[in-house]
Amino acid sequence: MSIIQPEIIIQRLSTRSLGRKILLKSETESTNVWAKKAFQEAEPSGTVFLADSQTQGRGRLGRNWYSKPGCGIYCSILVRPRIAVDAYPQLTLAAGVAVAESLRATAKVDATLKWPNDVLLNQKKVSGILCEFAQTQSGDRAAIIGIGINVNHERENFSGELERIATSLKAETQQIHDRNVILAAMIQSLESKLDLLENNSEKILFEEWTQLCGMIGKTVSLMTGKVPVEGTAIGLDEQGKLLLDTTNGQRRAFDCGEVSFDAL
Ligand code: BTN
Image (cartoon, rainbow, N blue to C red; front, top):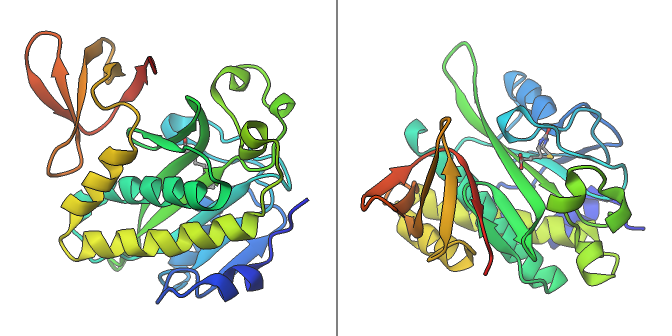
């Protein structure tokens, strides 16, 4: 069993602002909802909201995030990045790289990325990212970077549809992992990725993302509207949109959608 202890996470950090303040609840509806409320009440940038369980964990596209108590990382980070609002989707890419790097470094697993917000182990989802935009009535803006990581879940914990698509570090490595160590590595890495975006070095971030992405060069199917678009994943464009060479001979950039692909 690993217990989340904010003081241990903070001890391991050498960040300027991310994780300087960490709040922990044993249970909350959703750490993203909690962080959004706290932003309205003037919580500072860099604050991390952690919960040991969520009763209504939120995923992308209105889905739920399975938040088994005591097993996972359910975390939201409030940031006020000095980037244009139309660059906010790049925060999802930054968080993906930070999660993949931290899992590789701490759990020694071969974590890969799937556009736009998934981190995979052996083609199954170990982590998901939900970035949400927040604004006060006076126009103060922030992003809430919500990150869920399946850490010490048993394989049997994933039932129904999750059995096919989800995994955890424990299920893949047969070892219990310390959530404090993973959280500290992830927060530390995320600050450096946000620095890249704020310093107009997003190209470096996109290269790192592409290196970690398991889809590049593969035939993928992207669902954006009602009809799927088939093509080869080429990488990211200069804004972080997904580039596909479609089967009808066009190169197209996409800023949203749901990708599926065969690993082989
Ligand atoms: C997805 O893959 O669809 C995104 C999942 C994001 C889940 C995390 S868990 C912490 C934070 N709070 C939430 O309610 N959601 C995010």
